[in-house]
Length: 290
Image 1: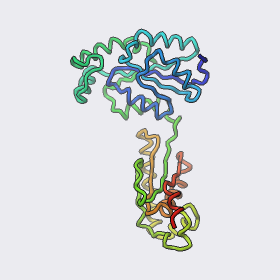
Image 2 (image 1 turned 135 degrees about the vertical axis):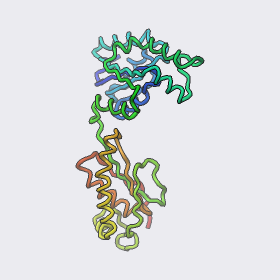
Image 3 (image 1 turned 90 degrees about the vertical axis):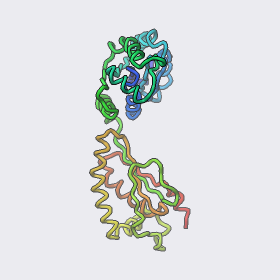
Image 4 (image 1 turned 180 degrees about the horizontal axis):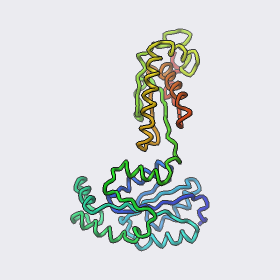
């Protein structure tokens, strides 16, 4: 086995069941980490050896459902330390009363005591995790944290700037169906359609001729101004709330002229402030149509 030369960072997450490990894993995934949940500790070196060359940042969640947790975890960590791999141990803590309430709200039993009251399993788990808690480099008490607050703390500590906020501007045609993965949708079918201008019909909204025609109409210019004002306000709010990307879609009838025009022009406006991507979903269909 190699000495994990490609590995840049290894996060090992553990803590009380119901304390937010799923939120933590999703947060690290958003930061670009390769994430694995409930991995047996003995497999950790093999995982690093296979993954580190292509994904240098790894986050692993290990909990007491892994039966060899106590016996093998720290043996593995000590062996990694000898190979100059220094895992960052992250522990998620929560008060007993909060955990009991969460189990009752979800109507789930504790994984360590499925036939007993939740508090029985909670006390067992707290004892099993005592050693990990003592060695943890970072401890988050999630008793009074909403999921988004926990995510914000992780993003702040582990540098949210690693992943830029990406704004995806998409054009599409309603005749081909509405995309499923959009956050904001703007219907631009109210704008005069270049399709009915013979010399513009074969062109697309990527051309200067079509863009000038679309924007020559007062309603298009007024809409563009209001749209920019709205997005100037909304995009920083989405970024502040911890989103790593958002999809803003523009739809017209065929996805060839008006929607592409607005996707192109709005994308250009925000290109100097965000990581911007522009996708014309139905361009291939549109260019084949007469």
